[in-house]
Image (cartoon, rainbow, N blue to C red; front, side, top):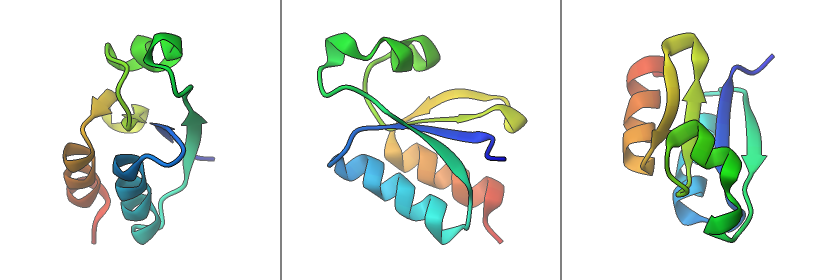
Amino acid sequence: MATLELYELSGCPYCAKVKTKLDELGLDYESHMVPRSHDERTEVKEVSGQTGVPVLVDPDNGIDGMAESDDIVEYLEETYGQ
């Protein structure tokens, strides 16, 4: 069962960057597709306090809503990389 959650938008290059890293590391995650309109992204705003994506949630490590693709990729490498 996946504990990682990724809030993403279809066609988002920053989201694709994070998904590529998740796949490279062989990590399972639950994907939450957000609406294109920022005004309708209430779920991701509740999680992270902002409406941008990608946002990563990793409850096993106390990550409630990490934004910024570069930060997420670095976190994944440091936490789950070999």
